[in-house]
Length: 97
Image (cartoon, rainbow, N blue to C red; front, side, top):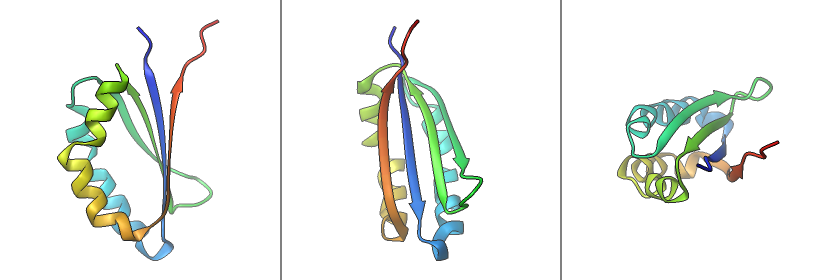
């Protein structure tokens, strides 16, 4: 099985970082219960506390796509969308040696 790793880097506007963190925290539990979610971990950058990074592993690309279309993700980004400077999403496959 090829696990899909996703790294999502979300940069909040400095004045909104607390609200963004609060809203991002709310989506962790429902996401962890989604089909195909192996892990869904939120991190804060040690050098810039307005940068949030999700490290995610999914059983398939379809599971990740379903996650991105889920109501809790859409609702979250409806609230925080204007409070963000940027969102970068990388989809990765582990190299086997």
